[in-house]
Image (cartoon, rainbow, N blue to C red; front, side, top):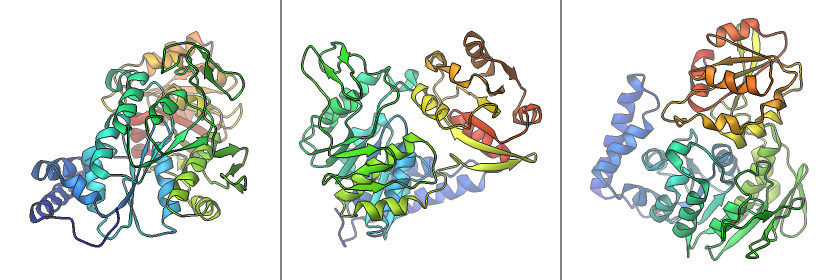
Length: 412
């Protein structure tokens, strides 16, 4: 919790200094931000450093398969109404990256931390959070992150008896099951567009019934809890029934859901919904996501989609046909090397769009589009795809490392 005493021992201060030096050297060598390697060095010198850095902060952790980077940014903006914030805003969300981020926030009151799903329980133990936001769980990087129910079980066990206020999505059965082990949960009706990971009951394995927006297990009685915060169109309803307008520069239904959860988190820290939502309007892009850039005389909107649930949400926000669409897929370590998830994406939603395919695994994607009866062209690179695209703004959708490649190519 926030306080005034210096929690850093001489060893911890040495670890912070060494980590920053290594990060600076990494940046100077053109190897990225250096946050991960700097954090690793710092934790090697002081394994308890993350806990020490978090000791004087009011911490909120944000975890999910989709939307955690954006939601972390929205929460950080909202909490700045109440004091200085330190956050891993660029998405380095494992312990080393989190440690690097907190090492740069000595004057902060709040720590707003995005956490990779696999590391949530451990980071929660280290940081003693006041609040934990759980947004969704769906299949992603199956070769690394394992099956969704296993992740939910890890969350459930790791958060059992936690003192933190858990803000959780009432519409995702896996999240509800994971959060239900916590004594203090605030339920948010944030919606769930992707349902294919939640047709079997996480509690007993029975078949879930999903009438309308409701859900329940007919065998064990596990069911959707009553939410106290509700996303309703362009408004969020607070626990008192007051409707607050959501005005975002970020597009799509998913970001309204992120804003609703962020407003509920901000309220835990005493920031009223009106103030929180007004501050969220300032966010125009998040680590390049949603940016519109100029490239070869064309407008390109950069969109990140790294798993079936993310692609489904992204298809819902792109401009209608005949807007050209460039799709880019890699399968490097950070993406997950298994591309079988492409078969879970409904590419018929792109019917009518001119489609151009690039990336390391463009041929995998081409086979999938062929089976979906889509018309497309395979291109050597972004330059060729842009040259072939018909007039108008181009929607560019890419998974994680492909997205970073595109940002470098367009100078973003």
